[in-house]
Length: 173
Image 1 (cartoon, rainbow, N blue to C red):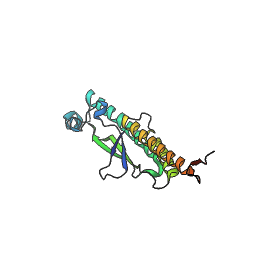
Image 2 (image 1 turned 90 degrees about the vertical axis):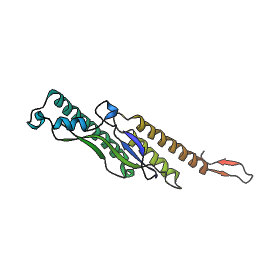
Image 3 (image 1 turned 120 degrees about the horizontal axis):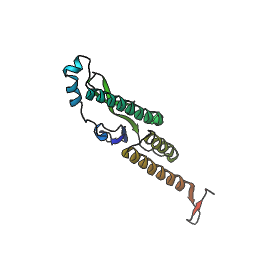
Image 4 (image 1 turned 180 degrees about the vertical axis):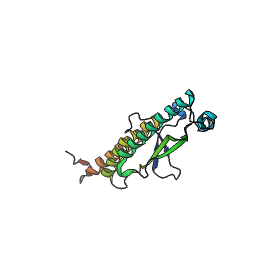
């Protein structure tokens, strides 16, 4: 899963599945589409290479869908969209998911550090939900941890109040 800022420059981020290119497999549908146009594909007979492509695409499809579902399930109410997928067409004419994304809201809750702390925890869980979180997944989890630390600091500061002589009193004890 990759984490990329959405184009509207808000605090929405997309949690996305690794691209097919990142796995060492073809980055586009072009070679697969050409194989689908071959005579053997039209006759229903597949070459060993085509059968291997189909098996790889099926496995990738399952991995991508499970990865995005894990994000979506963990994101709960902060998910802005359902899972969206990018597809390629295999030699068998079927469409296979090769990448995906789930948009989530990663903005702080204005004026409410307790709610921000809870939200940061949800963001972190969503980013790390898949069995194999990617580097960008781990990066967004780190950003969520920083957001949580900031919220904790705000909570701590709000629990300290100045005394009559200007010293801070710690009211957390």
